[in-house]
Image 1: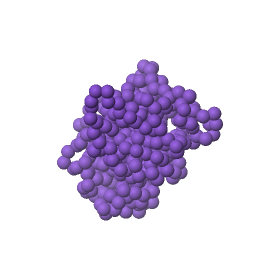
Image 2: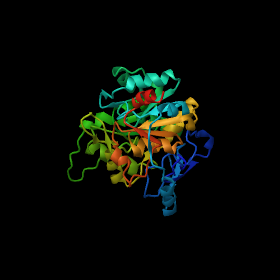
Image 3: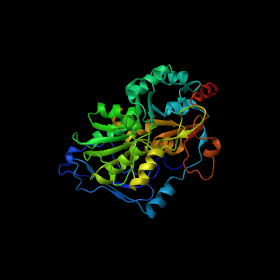
Image 4: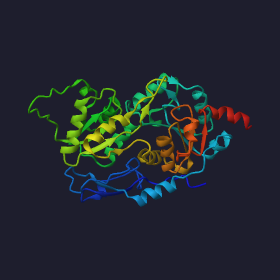
Length: 374
């Protein structure tokens, strides 16, 4: 079986945009960080970036690298999980996706409380990582509590938090502002991190009245545009974010995730954050810096925060292109659950190149499969 570490989808080089490179601290260590979703463009931020203390980031992507990526992502076919104890005993930490794994919409998936209790009783560290940026860590803590789950805020890592953590990691200037196309979770995390922001739900009701000669103004002190899932997205936000990215020198375009769909209810799939990111990508012709899964930024952050060896982690998720790829890019074991987006037919389709180590129906199979192997 080939290595669990998949190829990087692009080569990323990082150098300080300031003469004093010691001012920059990164939780990530290699070229995996932000190039995972960039497939066709050469993207660079010039070292002359007037926003002080930014980093100079350059992607280069060519056919030879893409060829190597395709060869490295060829993996042995995923195996059905038959011995839960063996997997549980082989790792120290379980990272769980939330939507489609722990819950669907506001409905808890059967057997989750008992499964988490069993893993805790065996001394396993549990971490919950979600690409959903609509809530802050504190707000997600309340959702876990409402669903009857005892999960601390420190065990929760949402992409809203990742966006703020990334800005802190590059020493984003406190005199610069962040324009947000997204919901309250991003705003709360930016506020906790001490960053100035504008936009968000407040701009959801704003309209543009087009007339001859109309020129839309924008804040020239905006140094980053953060785009996440936004149920209040409108043309005003798209145009404002576009102006900031295209006209403010060095303005960063940061995406919390590129998920195609999300679970707003347990009845069907809904258009995900990738649809909002795609609108800004289309209008700016710029590739975003993705801080959520499958970028390894959160994985590297977690490893440093808790002192976790990545080889002692099992990533559990329902999406191949985010959760499983996130685990593989981080060098972790991976378990796909079929309780969310991915079906068995999709997993086993010959065109699917992302193969987890194991798959099972839902995480409560840890209990039943454990029982059958005693």
